Image (cartoon, rainbow, N blue to C red):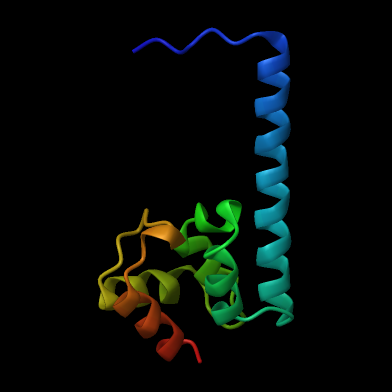
Length: 103
C-alpha cells in the first residue's frame, strides 16, 4: 500500500494537527497525574473532544495517581479491555467498571 502524495502545505497542516493532538494528550495526562482531572472527567470530555476520544485507554490509566503500568494492564485485563483500545471504543459497561474501579 502506497501513501498518498501530499503537497507541502497538506504535510505542514498534518504535522501541526498531530503536534496539537500530542500536546492535548500530554496536558490531559499531566492533569490526571496531579489530580486536577479525574477519570470520569476525561471520559466525559472524550464524548465531545475528538483528540481525547482517540487516546488509548492504557496511557490514561497509567497517568492516574498510584496506578503504574502493571496495575493498569491487570485492570484492563480483568475488565476485558484490549490493550490497544481507545476511549471512543469503550463500551458503557467497560466505562462503568473503570470508573467503579478507580473511584
